[in-house]
Image (cartoon, rainbow, N blue to C red; front, side):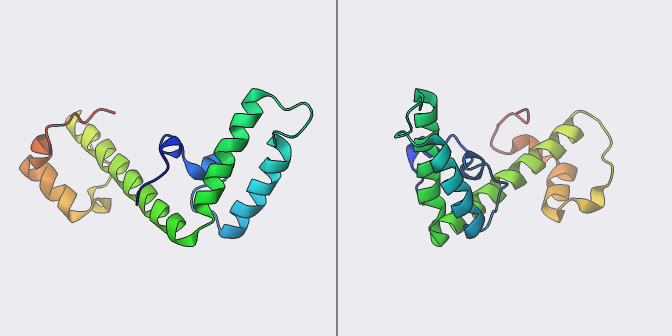
Length: 127
């Protein structure tokens, strides 16, 4: 699923002041609070507040659709898993001992033990 270009650089939940995987009711409540606070029709509204309103409205319009929200949550989960794997590989590459390898997925242990992680796309393990 394609996401609006303006929103690709942001966490949609954070734009609404929420933690990841918030419920539909929480999303709606937070959006309406932000809309009252940052709406451009307010007398003393600044340009920064107008931009905040536009971004929060775009995030709300995307997250209020259950199908789109589920797809976005799957994307967030994949990003979190990727960060976790990269951190573990960085620890291994730096020579530090891992606290417990029992928490690592089997496929990651195989990659580490065989050295396949070094050839995984030729990308740097630093981030």
